[in-house]
Picture 1 (cartoon, rainbow, N blue to C red):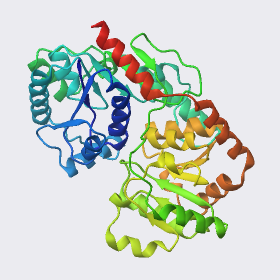
Picture 2: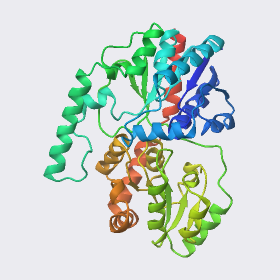
Picture 3: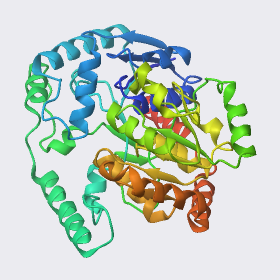
Length: 413
């Protein structure tokens, strides 16, 4: 039985859970093992029954937060210096010598673009469609400005054109990556956007419009977390009490890429509304924050969100792939608050489809948030479109499709 190495960035909840779901469907055909640098979500890997190799140098919580802020455009610096990348590649190549994987499956794990290629290991990138090269080639507009007015249309169309041309022409591989690649005998593809592709790229996104893909891309469809965790025993009671009092139940989640200020701001806003809130956001809060949230805001650690489908009436989410896909599969509408460009595009696609309302982080408070939530709860067209999207996704198993593609790649090698 061949070994397949899964190497997501384990500080990223969506990447980690996505890799777990694919590995679950592959484990009957190949030995699936994991490796990572952050302890933040590594425990989920072990809870799912997979072996996990903690690699050095361990990524600190501060470095993980800096990487997230950089991804959101909120920080000009990335923690992955030349020295850090060099050490990562050394650690990964040592693991490759030990495991001899038939393929390595990654998320946004930059160092694996060097180590897998240096060791001749096929690299599989399970990735979002947003801001990939096929997306930039074909999208007519990017959600830089919200709204449907002339200014927004002009700016968003121009942004798509400019980013497309930049991607087409940019040939500067990130300096640290280029230096470490050269040291390991790897010559990245000339264009930057090609250098950050895998040998096989599996698009784990909802497809609401037709797009063409190059030969080394495959559309597999949504892959999102199905945690083994049971629902906390108090949730059925809280939902029953809400139903008795005719209080809608709202699910509020911000994945692993938010920050304390926006989570608290939205929680306080929701606490003023006649709704019951179920919020797996405890990692963002301090003990003293909880006292000011009111009796109808209930904060948890991770929740098995798909088990809430029949219990909630709407969601307020940040727009990451996993949360958007979970909300879509629930058949309930959502407010999407995109914190970075990929999330904003995810939200905008659903707004266009008709099952979501989009808000910028700055407008996710006060009257705009209250109006958006009222729309979710009472607009019949929005709720109908949410059910339509659930039916559109019915029968789709992106994780199984990904596993089949990885198996075919390994068998053909």
